[in-house]
Length: 326
Image 1 (cartoon, one colour):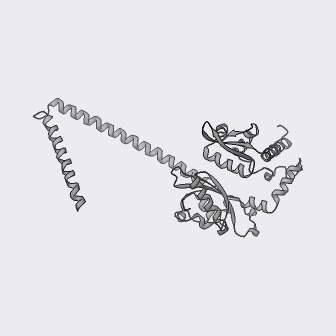
Image 2: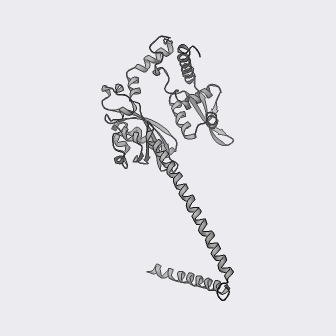
Image 3: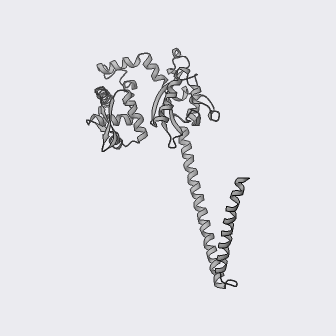
């Protein structure tokens, strides 16, 4: 009541000022009714204003139609990509998910909204996933991890053929999660891909045997392994990572911005791929300052140079041995 009484004098003063201004405006108007020409001018102005409103309405309808078409295209692309796209809140709650992501988790998309993504991860790997969220939201930098999901969900039909299922691994499926913070800083967007087949190959020693074949050069024309995709280094076999190593292989060192401009990549994409190359020990980095600004300089490591040369050699052999025209 006291606050209301304090406000009333202010409102009363404002009303008195408004009434005074209205009275002043009325005094300035000429006495008597408006003339014929003044009425004609008023009608003319009203007609123009009406046409302007109609044109604005048409433009709004056209903008709305274009926005709906853009939304439809985005929705189609969001749902037909062969990877799981999800938007998570700070505590890992699912905000959005596309159809492949719902199939990966083995639930209807409508039932996943508001659910926790961590509920689908095996207990032993939950700390890894939580660490990913902490890093992305705290450091505001892209990151990735590999975790196992519960159950033998229908996703195996979407991402990997059933032949890759390993009974020795139980019903767990291994997935790779790549995360980046959204522009509003309140959510993160993740890409989830199943890598169960790859992990099975690594655990059964297949990758080691294939690496021996690469190093010994045992792959020859007529050998059944000539076109074996496992011979290709999966770390390098990516457009962005291959472009990065190609450029670093031709120069002593390069900064992040220089690499980004050379290979035509975005900051977010390049950051994720540079982290992958660092984890594989194919590149090394050193932080410093240039013109009083922080700068990260990258170099290709001896291990990365060997892997790059081996990768290009295998590609060349695959092309030249079976395609004499090259």
